[in-house]
Image 1: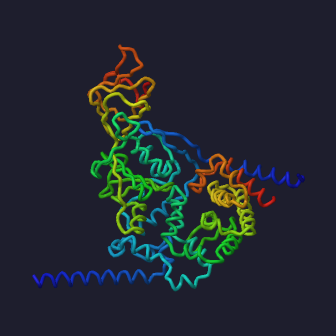
Image 2 (image 1 turned 180 degrees about the horizontal axis):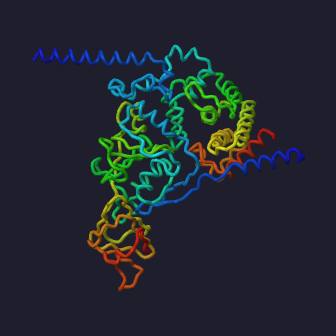
Image 3 (image 1 turned 90 degrees about the vertical axis):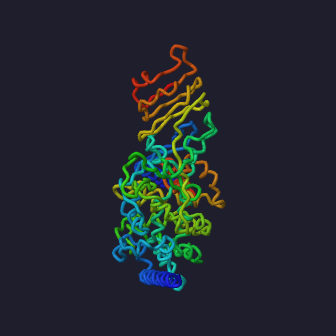
Length: 269
Length: 250
């Protein structure tokens, strides 16, 4: 190898290591019933600008308002299924979000973490397989307050956070301009009733925004399974008991009084 | 009863005529205007007329009229692509293939461009002429760094990647590497502007006849890059640049 070539390679590597950096990391997160979901944490400046998002709002006369600036911290799926559920800020690629409502095989009752529901009672919505977008349906002023007919909120990829009406986002407009009819929406709501012996996958009971979980009789957590209870606790707990198989009889359950001593999120194995 | 029916019919006809009239008004505006960020200088976006037009009709307003489409030069089509609103929609998609799909469905200028026999030749020429240090805006108001990125994403388009002959392949790989190096010399370095170079290079190097497909596909993290068109890390970038230099004989 000639000296010139060696110097060239050295300089190329120097430039690369000087100016590039790692701008994403891969993670595994879990659905409430314990199914793994591939997610990423991105850094860097978002490509999207409010100006460009506003262009589409004006062009398609969307019933929409930009309510927060662009960020790469999360995309639409990350916002709907992780950020607003208190799991953390993640970038979730298309189709990975489907796992949040197709994880029935991971549950003891065969029902997925997010069950099918009507628009009126939904907390979430997904446009798959027709288009790739996830939305939050605003309930009890969460994750943001409603404004007029703008009852939904969604993140536009690495662009801004936008509050909008039903099908008032750019993804619904793109679908309609191509197909001539409104995009079908798969409306979902978080499953909040639990009973029996949970399955052998660790659980995370989420529900930020004032959602209450309820137990039908006692719930048993199998030995070795971690149950993490997130921010939903509201004192309506004592409908049933949670038993932890691995613990001895005298501490085999935790009642509502004991729970009140814990700061949430709370994990127990 | 008959009188009511006649009244309803007349009402329908007059409403239809009004809408048709409105549409003619909007059709008379040059299609380029609709792609521009400042299109609302030409259209009252708060008017009921504008709001009543369906998304499908609004999409039609953005299309290049057939007679003009066939007479436009390939260079003009490249510029139409750069300034196209659907090109900017890259930022709305997590997966680049869905963006390409939207682009084809959204804008007839792109389909025409890719069907031109001299498309590759003209795209290479246009790309070489672009200067990352230039601050010129395109006629649609797009800044040079984005103009360059849009061309790089066009080069990495699976439909175009296969059209480069071996001489053109060397030329374009060489230019992508050169532009990458120039971008890293502009202070402050904007990491995101490098993503399109790495993406396009990874697609070109994946062509069978180059013989580096397996090496490219074995790079850790290459799958998210090729799926999204972005988010390379330093490991991917350095390996892709090294493979490119190896290919062009640097």
